[in-house]
Image 1 (tube, rainbow, N blue to C red):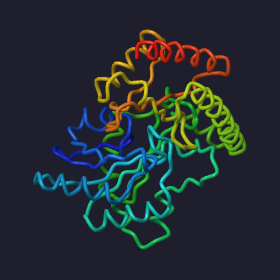
Image 2: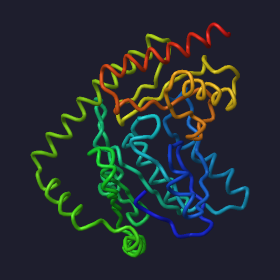
Image 3: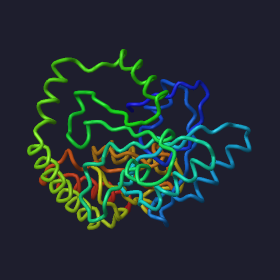
Image 4: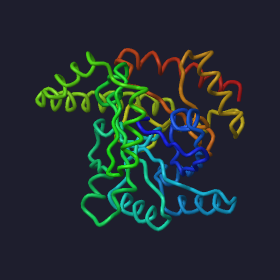
Length: 303
């Protein structure tokens, strides 16, 4: 993450998301409180779920400082609507807390639904801009994880002052800056790249999801990001995290496929897995499906 909270015992409400534990918690000691989303709602965040998590945490006499979310969502790949973003901003103002929006997949939207940045909403309405902070990086949309470049968009001078000090410990090298300035200044290239990338992601997603459906595995309706959220609940040997991890180990050891189990993303419904398909080509997809079929077949015969 491009932003670091400096409060030693900070508590944050977070939407179910992959890697926030590592990025936010391990180094800073921030306490993260998951806001659980459910399959019946396509894992879309709701104010009622947010309010429930907020009130339950306050009963523990723990002070909540902010909401941490990913939009587009990781691991599901869905988008927050303008209406939902407005509701989140109103909620934050009512509770006197901040919002950190991770929009690192903003350029990887390949569906018909429009992506709306929280910056658009806070800029068009009479909301307090000082409590909204956006983080972004080049590792996803431009597939440049090796350059280790991230950005913070905030109107809060205290946040920006802290960020400037932290950059002393994670500065970007001069050769990298020169390369990126040259690349990002080429507007025509960037536009063509993003358009081509979106089409390739969409085509690969459709191929991968179709292969899973042939195996009886359905995915949530999502049209963004580099992965799909697959429902393998009928394949876990026992309902619970233990059964989910048993299936994960079988996929890894028998099928030689490493998926992300839902429990790693704080999903409370066992049996959901994140499948990243953008490192594959079309021939790889056929191999992956055959390996999953092998696991599914052995599970069926044992059941």
